[in-house]
Length: 188
Image 1 (cartoon, rainbow, N blue to C red):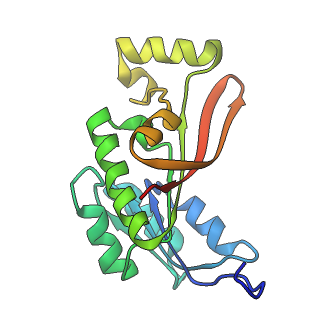
Image 2 (cartoon, rainbow, N blue to C red):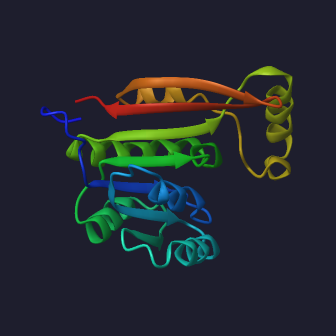
């Protein structure tokens, strides 16, 4: 809420790794949604087209095929589609698919964009915790393709090392599958 108690309006949101666009659609249809513009980005042409289909008819959203591993591409999409740096960046189960140099580069670009806008990052990835995730890591170390290339990562350590301030952190476990969920802001 702003100083007079009014709810802020007009958030610019970037979703990295949008898949089919389901999350974006649900957010835009939720009561009290404050999103003015949302760009749903995916490296897969198939997923970007599926997201575009799901979001068709929604004037506040656009799905874009772009590869966040290409330096500067995320910022270019934000400038051309949102018109500025986003207020929020959301990444669900993206960083656990990327190798360490790419994950660090993606986070660095997000850091720059959110430092510019004063915005926040919401990120989720699988993490270590319990026997199921121990087995998952063991399989990944032998043959990553057997677990879709996803590996457990420690988001909190990675973000702290990358000059992020963690505002909220939670570890969630469902049927032995552990995920770490974090909201963070760039440190200056």
